[in-house]
Amino acid sequence: MKYFLCLVFVVSLCCALAYDIDYATKPSLDVSCSISNSKTYSRIGQKHYFLGHEKVNWFEAAHLCRRYGGDLAQIDSAEEMNAISSHLQHQGFKDNDYFWISGNDLVINHMFLSISSGFPLTFTSWSAGQPDFPGAEHCVHLWHRDGAFRMNNWSCTEKAFYICQREYSSRCQVNL
Ligand SMILES: [Ca+2]
Image (cartoon, rainbow, N blue to C red; front, side, top):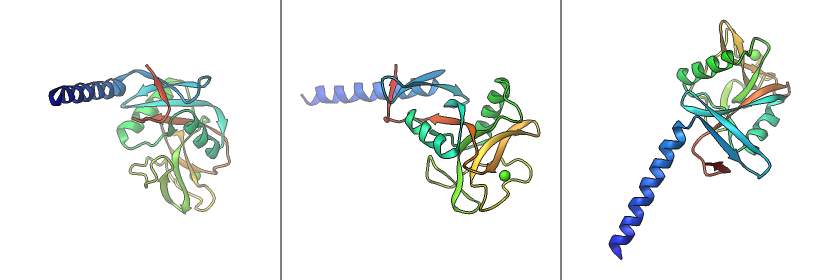
């Protein structure tokens, strides 16, 4: 009996590891939080992202990402920033296309936290002169400046597209 339980444990562990490895490299993930509401997250660089193509304010974007089984994108490195910037440029997005991401300084002016992790941003790629207007522009989006998509702080009630990310998570189902 003891050996049988050990075998079950080992097999389960292997399955879990195989699933995780497979999950990280899948080109896309279909995530369902409800039967009628499945969203496809595409692999861009090392993460899976969903691009919201309707223009909403930052608060609505944060809620929509949660509704879709993800969170507003948290860009943690230059590598991730470059991957997203290249993807957006490849998709034909230009200077007037803005995308909300997770950064905000709603708690303390110019101390930017991620609504997705709760922690300060570990990476920023501000465009020239940003962040500006402390106390007025509390939410972070991407815009195309100086040849790449970079970060800007903007009024949270303005409307923009948005980027959700999906990481290893048990919340909401991945359709395999
Ligand atoms: Ca700004």
